[in-house]
Image (cartoon, rainbow, N blue to C red):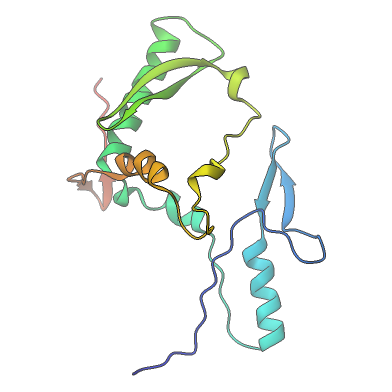
Length: 172
């Protein structure tokens, strides 16, 4: 058995320290708290306390850099919602609205795209439903899986140009 001297720690944004302090609480243009910095704070503490080499990675960066790992559902829905948003603005002369998905069913997975007044969603958040967390607090429920699994289905066949995935082609 090979042993490695390594530890991996995953920490959710929004976590607070025992002293009541939290990660850096910067604000965005809308006044929303931008949770960031907990990984860096743990990195600094660990390096100082254990005097070892430490790295921290924010997963949001990897998500933005991983379009090649998008599901077929991701790609199809992003094209659909982008087109719908353009239609709302150009064809229907709607302003102050955004295109939004409304879930119709999980099995079979179906959504419709509806115009949603921006003031109904701006500066608001939709939290992960507590009832989707197992009673033990260590897993998600079948309802959560039924909601999420359709979103990650499908494996696109990607075309590349100069090493960059070509997801869509905009016709002129």
